Image (cartoon, rainbow, N blue to C red):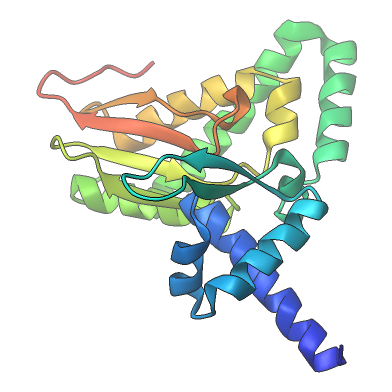
Length: 222
C-alpha cells in the first residue's frame, strides 16, 4: 500500500471516528452516505477499528432482513479526543484532597466555578434572547472541547448536548465537578431556566444531555 493510500485510509478512519462521536451509534450504510464512500469500504475500516478496540457494535432489529449492526465508539476511543491533561488533573485533585481535605477541595471547586461563570457571562450576555444564550454557551463549551450543540426537545424546551467530556477523568476522581456544572449553567442562563441532566457520560452514556425548560416561576440561584 502506497503512503498516499495509507494516508487516505487513515483520514477515512478518523472521519468515521469523528462521525460516531458526533452522532452516536450508526450503521455502515449511514456512515457511507455521510462520508461519501462505499459501504464496503466503511465496513472494512470499521472492522480494522474494531480490532484496535476503538469501535464496537450492537445489533438492531429491522422490519425486513437481518438485524443492522449499529457501530459506536468504545471507552478506549476517548484517548483520541482532548482529555484536559487527565493524568495531571487527577494527580492534583488527589494532592488537594490530601492537603486540604474534602472541605478544602469543595472551596477550591467553588472558586473555579465562580471564575467559569464570570468567563461565560462575558460570552453569554444577559440581554440576549434565551435561545441565543444557549447557542453562545454551546459555542463557549465547544471551544473547551465539549463538542456541544443545542437541540429543540420537541416539547417547547431545549437540550444542551455535549458529545465529549475533556475533563472526564477529573470528574471521575471528583464527583463535585459535575454538580458544579449544573449550578454553573443555572447561573449563566438565569432564573428563568430549569435545568436537569439526563444522559451522563460518567454513567456510561455516550454523551451528556441537559434538558433546559423555560419557567414562568423563576428558579432562584444561590
